[in-house]
Image 1: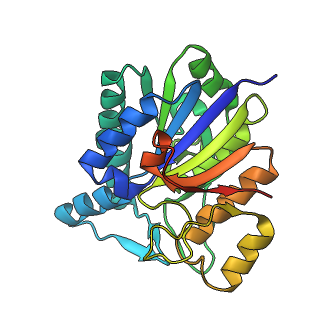
Image 2 (image 1 turned 135 degrees about the horizontal axis):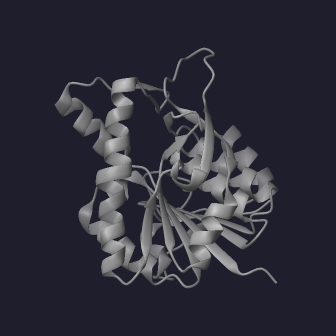
Length: 259
């Protein structure tokens, strides 16, 4: 029987709130068994870019990463945010280790091809090196990945954190019973984005198409949902979208995705 592995991706709005992040990390430290944490941090990177005079370009909610912007993103994601998270987890007794996809060749990507839009130094994940990650997990370390990958040709790439989380879950599912959780400030997928109590408790593939056609799920939630169903289709045992506080507070509702 496979042992359980929990992979949790924490949303940017929680990372931007020092109090919310600290509460989440305390709760994360109490999650039993093997676990991996994945984070982004786009808003902080954008603030620093603005201070440095580096123009941040976006297209349909996705960051266009120039060479100058990549320098900032790597410094903020892999440096400031990642190491602060690792230090706080160590404070809670978690033997965390901060990583990019380049460390241990753990997450390999290719530069996104130019079609209608040139996204610059943005990567699309092509492989997860489960062997390197297993070595950490089996030695009771807790990997904390930021949203930076590499192409094994010396180039770091800015990569969507939701996608990395899903690809990590898929890659590790051959060895572990893998559960994927997307934690952010909302109580799951909502019927009404203005009403935190309008949580949709269960969404299967058919219900997802219905919600998408009715424009109840749109914009930023769409790629997250696509990642969820891609993970379920490739042997990830469970996918949850919910509030970061729901890790330990079982009274908070959340959304479970099924096929």
